[in-house]
Structures are given as structure tokens and as C-alpha cells.
Amino acid sequence: MSAQARLNRLWYGSRAPAALLPAEWLYGAVGALRRGAYRRGWLASRRVERPVVVVGNLTVGGAGKTPLVAWLAARLAAAGRHPGIAARGYRGSARGARLVTGTAAAGVVGDEPLLLARRAIGPVAVARERAAAAELLIAAGCDVIVCDDGLQHYALARDVEIAVVDGERRFGNGHLLPAGPLREPPRRLRAVDAVVVNGGVAADGELAMRLVPGEAVRIRDGARAPLAAFAGRPVHAVAGIGNPARFFRMLRGAGLEPVEHPRDDHARIGAAELAFGDDNPVLMTEKDAVKCTDLADERYWYVPVDARFDAADEATLLGVVMRSI
View 1: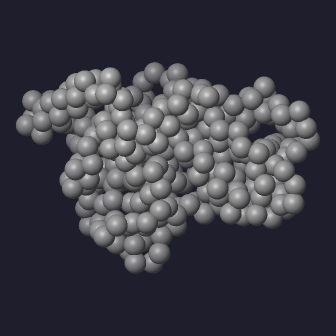
View 2 (view 1 turned 120 degrees about the horizontal axis):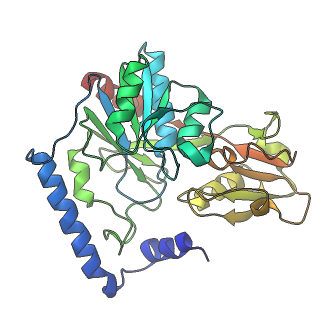
């Protein structure tokens, strides 16, 4: 069992061990002091010359932020704006701010920024300091900045905060790191402009989002095939995301028979990790696929997902954003 799987079992399947509670208290105290320092102006938040929309979450691991960022950037572009996407470039080796092209290496810029760049919604920039990425996007002609993650990155001032919640796992055991999955307490949601719930059941005041799979795309040549084409035989399913079970359930919901291969979030995926000893197709997430572009095996496919809302929730969310920017 991987380290991430053990943590998920701890955070989402049991009570927090008493031995971790002192560390949780220390983490919470440091976080509260830091938030207070920014709120009181003891630490400075940098404001850039264009409006900033932050899409983030309270928990460690995937909640659906990146599909929501892609959805929001596309809607802003359709409304006549010129959005740019700023990200940290988690686990990328790049230093300093840089624009991300579709030919970049995931090991340099990070897998999620590369995914967004290949979708060609608008310019994407990475930097450990999000303000530096935002400035680079503004210089490239962007008139609104959408941050993929960064709810806790208070060094960048923001005009809109959108928190994404995993509707199936919610907040796990309800504890802060390391005893639980939370970066900040749930009461932090009272301060955001919108709460988007990915899957599960949205509570009053929350906006319901679902992730809809598209056609499978072959990594080697971009050929497309409906998911139904993979039904009736086993397929290997690879997911190096925060909640791999969501990907496997999605495939089963499409009538497929996935042989599950969960990987740690942002894990390296190469030929060795995809050698399963048979000729069955391999379906992976889009985030994993950007790390496999040099693999020419015709069995390797990825399944993109897109965020969807009902008409009322879509109008509400876009209204919150457009009024604020």
C-alpha cells in the first residue's frame, strides 16, 4: 500500500490517532497566526493590476479544482475576457516565473499546468510565488487571472475565492494536518465567495458540479474512441490523482470493467508503471497522460473530464465571478 493510500485510509476511514493530535494543534496554531498576520497587515499581500480569482480547497489531494479552473477560464473567454491561469507548478523543477507551452515537460512545469496549457484555453504561467505568475500573464495580455489552487496562498491578494469540496469524502475525519486531510478548518468556507461541491450531494448554499467524461484519446496519435468501445473486456485503469476511486467509478459507470491501478497524486508514470503483462487497453487520467507523451504504445489512452453545472448553479457562479471582477 502506498503512502497516500495509507493516509487516505487514516484520514477518511478512521478517527485521528491520539498521537497526532499535538502535531495537529501546532499546525492549526501556526496557520491561525499566519492568517491573522495577513488579515492585520503584518504580512503583506501583493495586489496585481488585474482581478484575481482563486480556485482552491481545504483538503489535501484532488477535489476537482483543475477541471473547474478549465471550465471557468473557458466561460470567461466566451464572455469576451482574456483569462490567464496561474499555478505553482507543484513537483515541477522550474525556478522563477515562466509561461507554460503545450510542449513543456511535466517534470519541469508540473502536470496540472501542462494539462491546462494543452487545452489551450488561455496562457498558463507557473511560479512558486503566484503574484510573479500573475504579472507574467498580465504582460502577456490577460485581463483576469484564475489561480489553480492557492486558497491558502495569502501572499497574493484576490478578488474572488471559490472553494471546491469533494462531495463524496467531504472533510474526512474533520481534523487538520497531519491528523486529518484539512489545511484549514471548515469554518474557513464562511469567508469564500462560492462553495462548489464535486459529486455527492450539495448542501444549501453550495453549488453542485459533476465531472463528465469525454471520448478516450490515444496518447500516440490523438485518435478518439467512445468509452463504449472498451466495454466487454477488461481494461487497465491508471489514476495518479488525489481520489483515484472517483476515476474508477466513472469508468464502471460507463459500462467498463476496469482493473484498478491507483497511484499517488502526481506520481511518475512511465513504461515500467504501465507494464501489466497483457495486451489489454490502458486508460488513464488526462493528468497522468501529460507525463506519458513519449510512450508510443497504441494501447495507451486517456479519458478527459469536463466540469458541468445545471443552468441555475452555472448562472449563480458566473454571476459571483463577473460581479467581483
